[in-house]
Figure 1: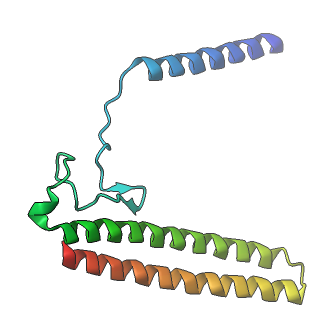
Figure 2: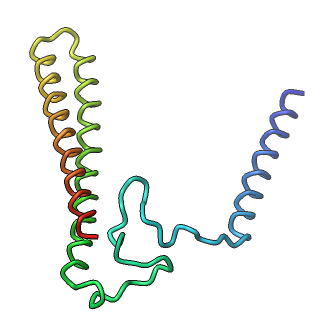
Length: 140
């Protein structure tokens, strides 16, 4: 009886997986995020350069210098947000090292130093993102 139930469960899983894969491949999906202003929390590098229909604006109409600076500031903001995520990862790493130092004063000191440096980097990153957004808002 138990073998029979296991066979039914295995068959059900197989059919569900195969059916789901077939349905996913067989039905065409429309893409709504083709020209989104954000990817996760990162701004698109072309934010402020394209219009609502995903067409690039004429740089001559808005000024080539403004056009280039908008792209540069978007790329800088992406990099600064990436630095923020990396610093959060270092805070987590430092916390893990602190918990697993097993009472070693040298290990605890290194972990505290890692956490402190990561928090300083996080604050600098967040401040820099705010400044870049302020400058980008003034340019747009």
